[in-house]
Length: 318
Ligand code: CP
Image (cartoon, rainbow, N blue to C red; front, side, top):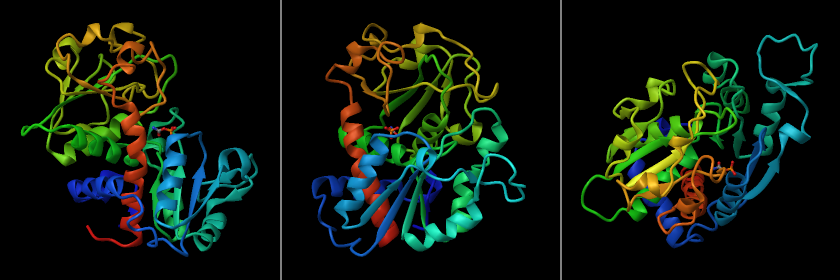
């Protein structure tokens, strides 16, 4: 594996999930694989789970890990190739990235979208420029459009908990929010579940929240929440802002919040959310506190998904 920025970098999802779950059973089995190797985590935006789980994953493999909060501590970087830098940016990624490439064996980067310019966000300029100019493997810690480590974790969590000999019915359920949020987690979950191909996959959202069709091919899209939730085995709750009316909030409809009452047609459904979550806005506290909530398991499994990916970059086996 030369990079990990999308499901397309994981041609065998089941093998990668198995690898993650093997690491969960025995986290230190490859504790010398990364000895004398160094990983850099570059954060342009905040994080708790991604930052800590990736650090732990790297340490479990024996790697040295350095975190750099570029967004708050670094020089303001320019990413446009032909920019005349007479504004706020003081250093070009062309000049900085080759040095980072010499400092590290693997680079990881988190960059959120602006939610102002769709074509710029969806061009993934930041991560692609880092790949182009660093010359070493790059792992996405969530980019403008995708969050692959989260999605690998989510499929691993579903595989770990679904014990029946049939396909699970998985519903990605849009949730209300007071702020416009990226489409990354929803795009990415859709991309991974459809590529995985071992689930009946439904995306439920109000009118105006269609995701980029590039990620939803193979999913059933339903605008009626009650219909979508019926007999769900998993309900993945997430807000995203509009893709078509880019970055806008089209609805504050509280009826789309998942509560215990809302789940009367899917009483045993397992509830997922990548976190952080706004309680009683996106997702009812009654549901988050119930035994069916998988959010702690998801957060825990972030370590082993990251460990599987770093291991594949250090020594491919899949
Ligand atoms: N789910 C997730 O990416 O969490 P953080 O933003 O805390 O990293």
